[in-house]
Image 1 (cartoon, rainbow over the protein chains, first blue to last red):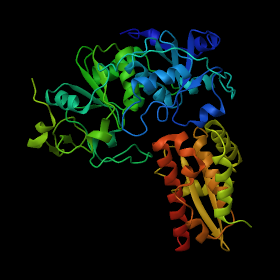
Image 2 (cartoon, rainbow over the protein chains, first blue to last red; image 1 turned 90 degrees about the horizontal axis):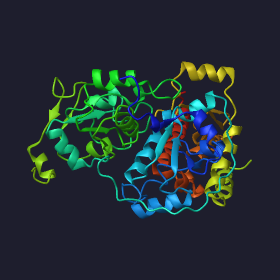
Image 3 (cartoon, one colour; image 1 turned 90 degrees about the vertical axis):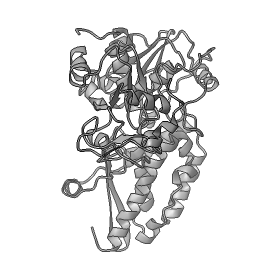
Image 4 (cartoon, each protein chain N blue to C red; image 1 turned 120 degrees about the vertical axis):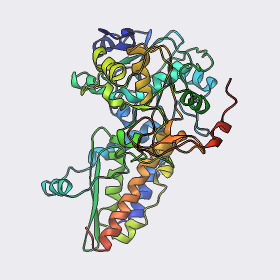
Length: 305
Length: 146
């Protein structure tokens, strides 16, 4: 594969610099560390925070459709606005924000390749100026279930041996660790992975400068080495669905997978569920690892068709 | 000299008045005042395991007490200015005070500053872990360990 399947989903820093005054374009920053935006952002960029803006603060879920519409209206975003997301950490949170915008059907969403790091390496300008967004009209669609997997669907998917990709570190995958190296344990009671999931740590998709690897490199990583298939239904997961949204972006848009979903419940749900199967160890299935498939697991499901 | 508690109260009082954006600006202000490690501290950081493993970003932190005066020594990666700002607040509050006072650091600093709403649940939890880490370091110091 010589080129990305959907190259228009990525824009360069040059492109962004040339569109700063374009009223049809809104630049959106989303970071792990919120103070980075306050310290300095791309001129005119608004900040949409994955935790405070996009998540429901009571229930573990995203903001609802009305909340999403309000967020867009306040940030000067119309349904036909071209949105360009960027951020820290290889655009990890930018991809997460993009995924939520896709969930509510926003048409034109792109990623600034390389994010904050590439912009900084290019020596481009940061500003701490406040951004005043014009009020916009926005009507969202209902959530697009074709890109989001919920627990029962994942269980069904796993039981029918469809493809899963676990994008966490090898230590989290094997169950040796319950959380990322150097990150806090956010509360999974069990370690390991969903049976059958292959392990491709998310950061392997990115270069040192924060940009995505080439189409050839990504094809080798996901198609040749991990043996994922572009036409096979695939579910990506991590710990809370953030790292896997970057992998989801890569599979869907850069490699052109026709049916790939992000399981945002991820290990913080699966590793706490009663009665779901778990494999420990470095092999996708069985091996010397401890595997447990309790008889009661089917009770979690509505009957299979 | 003001107690840890009264210094913190002053910072909390100032921060609580601010809007979300200004709160982050205040954190950035503190972050810019966090002193860099001396050469000797750099060597300690490298030779001893001073990394805060509960923390999301590279944070190295330990306490020292001499003649009943505590000091927090810390290095935080510049890509994490929120963490750097919070650590700088703790550093200023603790400087020169007796270890017993440091142990009374409250756990709800971020909530009282009004930062919990700005940062969200997960980030708040991560920062709170730093307070626990500081106290454990003080306890180890009181027990005569380094």
